[in-house]
View 1 (cartoon, rainbow, N blue to C red):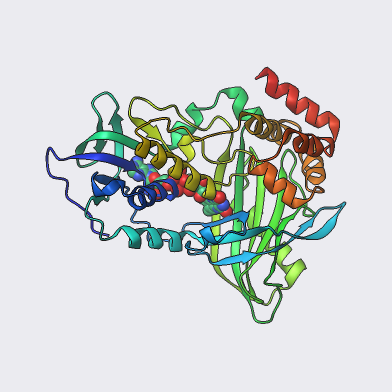
View 2 (cartoon, rainbow, N blue to C red):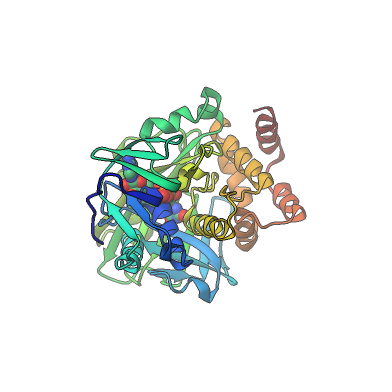
Length: 392
Ligand SMILES: Cc1cc2nc3c(=O)[nH]c(=O)nc-3n(C[C@H](O)[C@H](O)[C@H](O)COP(=O)(O)OP(=O)(O)OC[C@H]3O[C@@H](n4cnc5c(N)ncnc54)[C@H](O)[C@@H]3O)c2cc1C
């Protein structure tokens, strides 16, 4: 990929702000749809996306249409553990997949590297002016004729999207530390991953669990994850993770890489379109609020945007199921505001068939299936969550 110097007065048909997951996915879909044969695109990002800054996991029905992606691993069997149940489950027709961030960035950059109508600018966007159709970076002001797709956001933008009530009752951080580890001897079943192990000590006012993604008999990503609105000192994540690895698998291993980060979880983290500035990715409300997953949802959103562009229509909003968004809000409230009851609800939730839960989290369940799931969770915390969400 070659970076451009932007000539003065040059205009682009489309600009994408932020070449992360949503920005790159949209650029790829624009190219694949043929729209870039006649339209120009500028991608702006201060990062050249040359680091493996994350590992994406997601599930999908086993479909050949996903095999073009640079998938690193996949699993057909899941282990789920809590203090009251411990079971393995065959996931078919679903498969759980894993992609390294760097593999996806390279895959997209490689596909787009010789496309004549795409230019890249390694720069930071400082502001945009929707009425004048202009984007300001630290070195240039650049105009567009059609749309500016915005995925980058400034760290203080998040808190302005949330009211004080949201911050305490309807907002969680998904925060985690994971180690990619290599044992001298075999320790893992490569076809089976641990989706959630909730047997670990719980923090007050949140939900904590481990997950384990084996890449071979002796290598795996083991990750300590918490849903709560209070972040911990880094040493607290390290202690819990090291102790879990030692207890479950032993201590004859090396750490090859780590993943330490946080994802905001709320149904309110999104902005509205202003004129031709179209939010995508996290800002477009694409991240599933109750799980933090967004890989396939970004693919779905990019496909939706491209279909709208091809049809000459401009309803670019991510197609959200209002009913499922309400459940997201209830689940977040149950964890965020109800001290110890989050664990009880998730514990009961994950006694359901995982395939049904995947369908629920994919927002594809019928209302009868939703009722079946709701009947399985403790009534009182759930009713409190529903009530708080209705009043918000
Ligand atoms: C460590 C980690 C693990 C994750 N694991 C999973 C997972 O297993 N499954 C899953 O589905 N999701 C996962 N996620 C969530 C997923 O990565 C995000 O939801 C997704 O990246 C959001 O896409 P985005 O395009 O909105 O943001 P990003 O992918 O973060 O892209 C934003 C881009 O904007 C750029 N940028 C920032 N500021 C500016 C600026 N001022 N001007 C121009 N560009 C700018 C950044 O450099 C970045 O490239 C994970 C996230 C993290 C951090």
